[in-house]
Image (cartoon, rainbow, N blue to C red; front, side):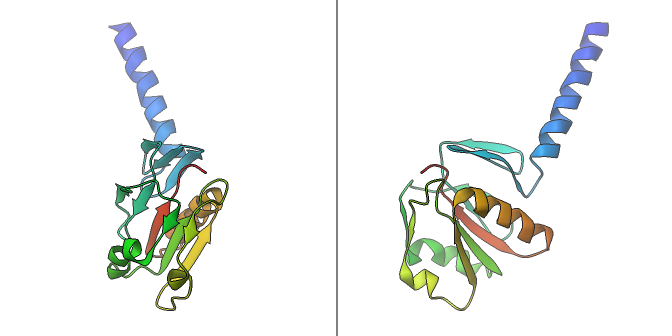
Length: 135
């Protein structure tokens, strides 16, 4: 019985620490090939974060973001659209996206993109994002 209590206590501490470092609705631990969003680890995939904060796995690991891919996100009326261009800044963004005036578009290297996403969410902004998790 005492071992079970210790195990439960340790698990509670670990879960609390995990949630503390990887908060709900925000990016937490992010490294090359691993994104943790809203306490959920996403290894080896790119993410789409909708303006309401819900994550989805991006269908491809393409190094190009075109207007057709962001159209569904634009219908959600975000204040800002962040595009994480990878750790080596390899993702190209279609010029039409960069020229938009209806929404602020921020193409940033992935580490900066996840930091900026968290900052804007803390400010109460509706933020949509496409984040490339590798190169």
